[in-house]
Image (cartoon, rainbow, N blue to C red; front, side, top):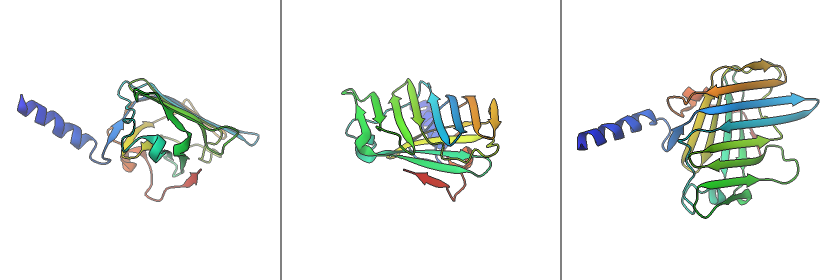
Length: 189
């Protein structure tokens, strides 16, 4: 029994060694749109392995904020900051919500519900959609807690619009796996 537990622990460690505290997840959709100067971002995962950080713990986004990173295979990348003061949580620590009033240049709302959903909606896409993007990696970071996915193809990848569906969980959350270059692109607040 001890050998089985050790084998499982080693397998989990090897699978996420590239990023400590990483949880690769599947995702339902990623939409990036730009038309007539208006932009829209929508990311949705309904993976059962999504983890909400412990309330008051070192990864609580109400204390440490969060960051969403998008990396396209065409070399394009962007990161969005989620300010700590805009997060709220339920008492059980299973649901975190992020909300910004007005029209922010970045994420407007986000929701992370343990074992259920991770959703981000924003008024900026961060990536240039003036051509095709190819595969796009998505990484959400809260302290040392990292959850990621990669959309390998899109049902629509044209100038002004990227619409991808049903991403499988990647092997790990490393920059190499997600297609992120070491020199990251724009940082959007």
